[in-house]
Image 1: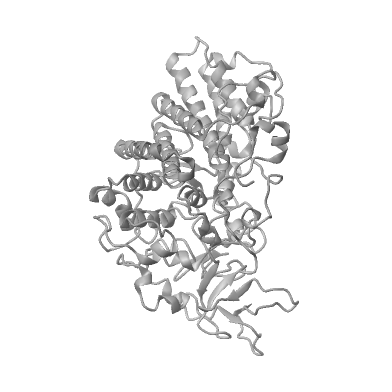
Image 2 (image 1 turned 180 degrees about the vertical axis):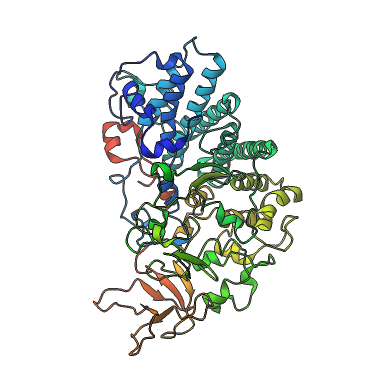
Length: 596
């Protein structure tokens, strides 16, 4: 069977084929050119498979997945994205209004009708094509809202080419119809390589789509679509339950509570028990990714670092809120990370974390050449320093995990008001048990965590829903869901949250960050005359030596902060991207999204 590993080295003959038979417009606003067809392609299963291989190019590769949370409320980064800076982003800079992939898919659907291929095979490949059309349109929906729904390969004289956008409701209904067709007609039910689209992937994706849109309509009341929200949420729950009832996947517990979570992201071969689909590397073919380079470079990546406000939401190991401690605000880093949800130690550098450096296994505390807050991520990296410079990583990166399906189910049920103790036990409760939490995980929560509610979701008064959102945030951190979750929950102001770091007990006093007896870092406003050898010294003075404003400072609570001198101000227009101005000039009927 076809393996997606070939897509990483551009050996897909289907890509070449598609460029021949689907040559045409690169954008909806450009005139398509006629192209010669190859009837032999549609006359055999092998030909259909060859063409269908090109659809997989639409899935994100490992590099895209590694970077997928580069704009999120819970992470500081080297610079504030222009999108979030007042006046820094506009329709002239907007991108994403590209339609080449859609024409490729629609051309296939219009021509896959040869009687020389058995009907069930034609429907199977049409199902695959419609899955990818749904994938294409879900990306467009999240980015732009209303978009033109195109289901045929348009020619230059097609009046739709220069038409307006279709409604959000029509687009969503069409996405769901495509996914329902795909679920009914895709033949493949299991794929050991975790690189192909199966029935379970279709249902998992449907749960993702319906949860997004159901909650979007519930909380974005300005669209007046709230009456249809519950129907979508029920579809999300039903699709997730279909995957759960198939018993093809489970939460991986290999390695125990201290390793099972992170092992999902560090192996060359996807963990088949839980990973449903992944961007797979193949060292034998020279196919790698650059996760270590991105996450452990002072210059190459975004230097994403978790912020303290978010780290505070990780529970104590007994299931109680960490912020229930009276001293939580003034605990030094080495102490605050102890006795917590064990996903924390598998997400950031802390405690006994070590890395291979040459032939030596070395302790590896947070490094302030890489982190701004002290909470330095490790989740998607490998523990080998030789991989830090270049595309050398050998870990496959998941794009669908069974954990997400469980969370989709739990959240949809909670939003519907039908979540039971049994539902909680097999979803969020199971995830907490995997993370080593020993408190009650079998019955749904009934007590509001005031810290979580105040800082993140002040309008939510259902304790179960609050805890499911906590669980989703922690379990799926850095997997590319956060910004879209903020969008659908209508919690854009979270993007203004201060980029704060750990507590600094005293200036000019070196800190041991991992309890190994070695001093690691010290913070100063005036560099001490006799610095301690081996200690990294970080200035938190208001201004640097050259007179410029220091982006790394302390706030009034003695927490590190980053880039407080750069304004971020959420505007509700940011819930959608603007239609690119160049495309609007060619087709004024596209209009523009509110506020842009």
